[in-house]
Length: 136
Image (tube, rainbow, N blue to C red; front, side, top):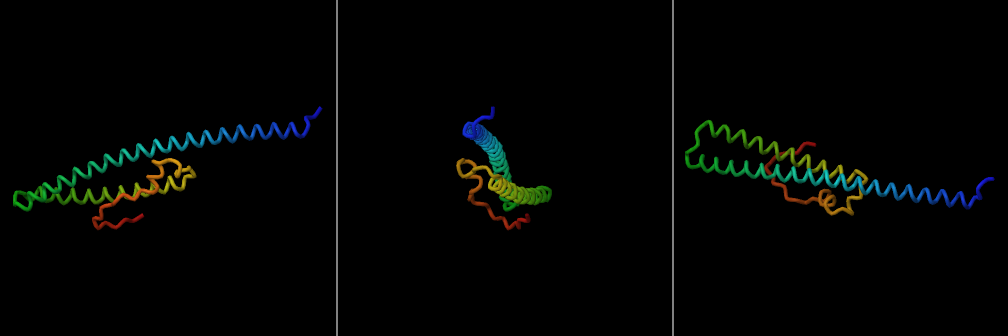
């Protein structure tokens, strides 16, 4: 004997509700994992920023030495090479930061609900302008 249409409809609705709840759980777990990955990326970026800060300190020390005449030609060349590396690192950092923001925004994850993801997408941190042109 066939199940009455209402029972079949109710069973289908219950199954769909379970699947929808399961999907929401999976999407929430995905958002959490993506958030963790982005937090790790942020920590990496913070460490890279610290390296850049230390390089800038070294640059200032070398510039002070150059101004006082204590800098030989070898150190002047090293200083120029380090300056070029810092500029290249800053350009790469800006590209990575913007790409991470675009990936989160376009991923379909509800980034507006998660404070850390929202901060990544809407990051308005000041960027130092060193005259570099960013090519995407």
